[in-house]
Image (tube, rainbow, N blue to C red; front, top):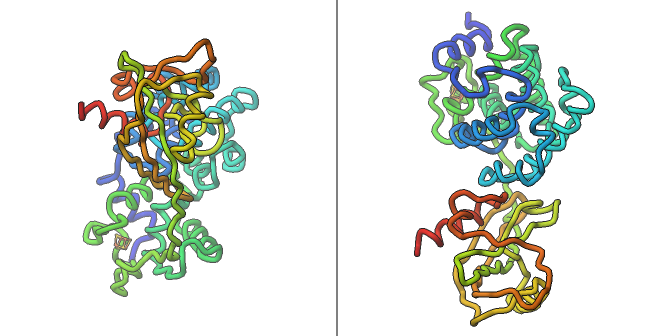
Length: 347
Ligand code: SF4
């Protein structure tokens, strides 16, 4: 008879799982929570250096809660999905007031923490049984039980939660949680799963039915609308670039960015509003394309050398371009930082 799913997975984890991730030593609620938020939509290898820098600067919840929002965003710079950083900061402040929760329900009430993340935190930080269902786990379960309805459908979600619940053991909650996440990330991968190395392959329905490549099923997505914008690359004569802070909510909320206008016709009035005057004509410089969750940004980057005009107050800041490229003192969206870095490298 085949051993229970959890037993096989845990035996595999003991030998092949990841035991040296920085948030596992020590596995405190703060470190686990931070890692879980950073790991949303982001791979472990990318997260590790960010996690280490973040922990060095904000070693506990009190330090994070006491920080300025800009300092938090600056350390998040390049990791993307900045609402995560804003929520993290807000949640830290709430925990300083109300205490650190120790239940799934308590964690799920904090900003930025969904039911699966809340369960992952409780299981790993308190070693208490809690059922997780993140993207990796959904893929593993959809294949293992050959769930062939679209993942996005509410009925499929209910089925997957039930399958996850059935398989979650009463003991070794922290290890099981890490184990199933590791299995999804390293063996039952999105492309090219390594079924020959999989500890639960014996009763995997997708494998038996030869349907591994077609599962999980996703709804066909509509193409995303494209938003055309123009970014203004404004340099002074001393190698500094003008950036301004975005409004707190919305795309790149709270981050510093090149001024954004809808069309080139708006560029001039924007310069006026910023109290800047151009020394020469605009130059077409680059193009920045970036895919957001709900639309695609297609931005032309036009450049000009500018100088402050009169005593007008400007809403932005000047920073040396080299500094923005390699060690930004302000939080910059990753694609904008990349653009600046490529520009610097091209000179
Ligand atoms: S046998 Fe293959 S498809 Fe099935 S769970 Fe394992 S890795 Fe995934």
